[in-house]
Each structure stands twice: as C-alpha cells, then as structure tokens.
Amino acid sequence: MVNRKEEQGADAISTIKNEKADAQVEWKHCDMGNLKEVKEVFTELRNSLDRLDFLVLSAGINTNQYGEDSDGIDRHFGVNYLGHYYVCNQLWPLLRKTGKLGEKPAPRVVFESSEMHRTAPPDVHFGSLEEINDSSMDPTRLYGRTKLAMILFAKFGLRDRVIKPNGDNVYALAVHPGAVNTAMQQQWKDAYPGITGKLLSNVMLFAGRDPEQGSYSALWALTSDEIEEKNMNGFYFNDPVSHLPVELQSNPN
Image 1 (spheres, one colour):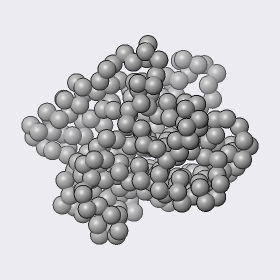
Image 2 (cartoon, one colour):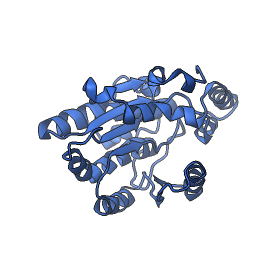
Image 3 (spheres, helix red, strand yellow):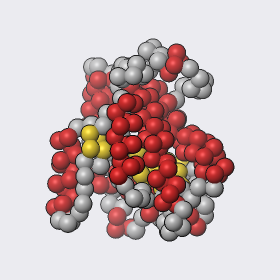
Image 4 (cartoon, rainbow, N blue to C red):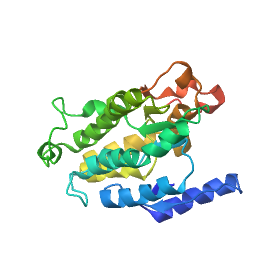
C-alpha cells in the first residue's frame, strides 16, 4: 500500500486486519507529485517483490485550484496521471515477468478514472508543458483532463504501444468508481470558494457511495473472468456495478 499520508495508511491497515488478522500489509510513503520519490519507492518495490498480480492506481487530487507539484508541473496532472505513468514504467518488468507464468488471471493494471473525463478541454492534446501548466484553466477541466489521460494511457499507451507489440500477458483497464463519500469531496470548496463550492461538495456527499461501494468497480476489473474471456484489454468501464451480485448493489446511486 503506497500513499502520501501515513495516518490514512495506518487506518486502512487497521481496518484490513480487523477483518483478516493474518493479512500481510506493508505501507510505504510516496508523493505522486514527486517523480524522484516515485522512482525510488517503486524501483525498490520492483526489486523486492517476486511477482505482481494486481496494480490499482488510485492516488489523486479532486477538482481544485491550479497549483504546481515539486517538479513544477500542474499538480492535477502530476499526481493524477504523470506519477501513475511513472509507476507503470518502474513496475512493468515485474508485471511482464508475472504474466509469463501463464497463470489466470493474468496481471491487471487498473486506473481509477472518472466520467468527469468528459469535462476535459475539447482541444486537449498534451503537447507541451506550456499547455499542461495553464493556470487559467477551470478547476473541473484540470481534473477532467487527467482522467481522460488515464483512459488514453490504458488503451493507447499501454495496450497498443507496449502490450500488443511485446506480446505481454498483462491487462490495462480504466474504471469510473462513481462519486464516493471521502474527504476528496471537500476539495470542491477550495476549487470554487463560496456558496458554489459548498453546494457542489454537499451534493456529491449526498449522492455519493460509501468507500466500500466505491471500490466495487476496481475490484470487478481486477477479478472478473469476463475481462479475459472477452479480451477486454484497454477498455474503460463506466461503473460496472451491474455486473455484481444483487446483494452487493445496496446503493443504486
């Protein structure tokens, strides 16, 4: 488990061990907006693990004001996309090695994207740092652009340019988890100071799912036999909760 805030990692580990006392969970600190740290942490992981079956890329900044990360890059793009890109770069030899074992399910990489990718600027092309570091861009578009980048990376960056040419037995997928009731929804207040931000935050919290329900889309993409049976590599799934057993669909939102 890798994230930036140790207290969040400790809480998650405690929850896991309460449900399964013998679970083996290790936490590591990493700021996804610091490429030097990403390289150090994930190179160490690659060298220390014998195999890697599942990789969920879910770190992120929600819709928020423009700012730059430690590398001088728009922090939305740096954390939500570029950091994840570099994680894949560092861990790909291990994913490829595991895929060669020929076991099922094959290794899977799942990006937590969003339907808000549709709010990305219509002329986006990720062509330069000047384009990325556009401080005049609306906060929602800053966020949506990164979620679009995730979907494109899974399909065109990994599937078409890495997996297919090299014959890698790895699946790259992106999912929409739905609005989830976490502290991230409070960032709407920073993105749009005043009544607008408060209203958006309250609406998201009211309509959203609890974190357990929010995990279903990624878990389905990681474990469903349908992914390999239908060769759905590079696919983006818009909330595949309908694939789950009825008893798990406790919140229609």
